Amino acid sequence: MDEMKEVVKAYVIKEYVEDDTELTYDTPLISGGIVDSFSMVSLKRFLENKYNISIPDDKATPEAFDSVNKICVLVNEYLK
Image (cartoon, rainbow, N blue to C red; front, side, top):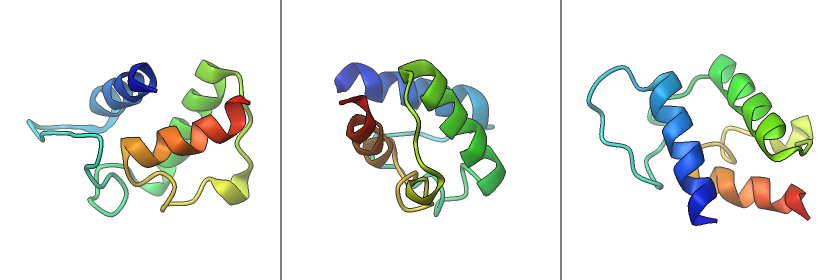
């Protein structure tokens, strides 16, 4: 899971962080204004393509995408 956390964190930084914001695995992404609803959709697609999974829309909630740690928990549910 540590590798996944690094992949997700690197993607979020590359795509959504516009300044020198320090990003940790627990940094609030949605509630902190780093990722908006449109960006959440592209992040979901990235995860689905990267890990060859399908995340149901009803599970792709702002709460589930609010930190790198929460995203990794969600992805792991569908890797099995």
